[in-house]
Amino acid sequence: MGHGGHHTGVQAPPLDRPTLRHRILSGEVLLGAWASLDSPISAEILARAGFDWVVVDLEHGAATEASLLAHLTAIEAGGAAAIVRPQSAERLRIGRALDLGAEGVVVPRLDTAEQAREAVTFLRYPPAGARGVALLTRGARLGTVGHGDVAGLNEGILGIVQVESRGALEAVDEIAAIDGVDVLFVGPADLSHALGVPGRFDDPAYQAALRRVVEACRRHGKAAGILLYDHPAYAPHLELGFTFMGLGADVSMVAQGARAALAAARSHLP
Image 1 (spheres, rainbow, N blue to C red):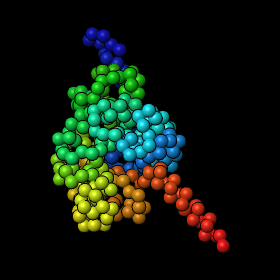
Image 2 (tube, rainbow, N blue to C red):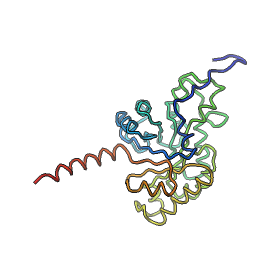
Image 3 (tube, rainbow, N blue to C red):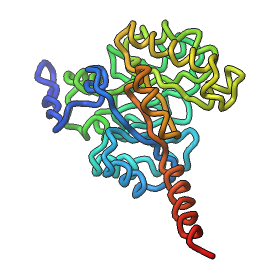
Image 4 (cartoon, rainbow, N blue to C red):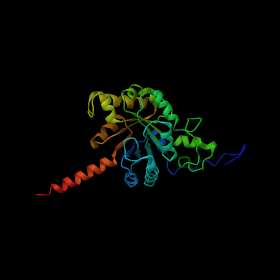
């Protein structure tokens, strides 16, 4: 690294692909999956299947921060972008995910625009944010990026804020307007429960909420995201305007595949 007035380090080398953030904000439809099992192999299987992104779920999944690095490297080896949903929106939890190399963060359990505004500051180094500056971390390319060049790292981090409460829904337009919030991501189970229509995804109140999220994203040039488990639901949500769609989780795929295989075999028994 440089001293005094000298250059502070080398430029960040170009990535071999456009960043996920660039792609989603350009209007591309990106499909992903949730890694809920504590298995880097399972996470790599999802990546190699061709998903654009894979989320390691530390909020509800079985993985922990101790196993997170193995998951991130496995997803990258499989050719997908690695995203993390931390346990909470705390600065330390978000920072750990980024320092280990996450390309994006799904921020859970936010109810107000003020909370969202604070959370996205944890995604980026100063002056754009309040992320702790530790340039020997994997997320900062292990010392190959200088202090003067962290803006390039900031540009590559995808900020995803979940809309899963009445409060977040009420503030959705204000949240979408925040610089650094790139994707507003609906949590269908939590949002339907919050609206008093648990699991009733065809209910008019829930459908109106989805439209409200999409419209806020359109107004502010952001992307609307959602996690879906019902395959026939993909087309209607795409038509509605969702462009960042999770198509299930490894645990659901294993469970469904196991049941389907057993049912198919049993159907031939006398």
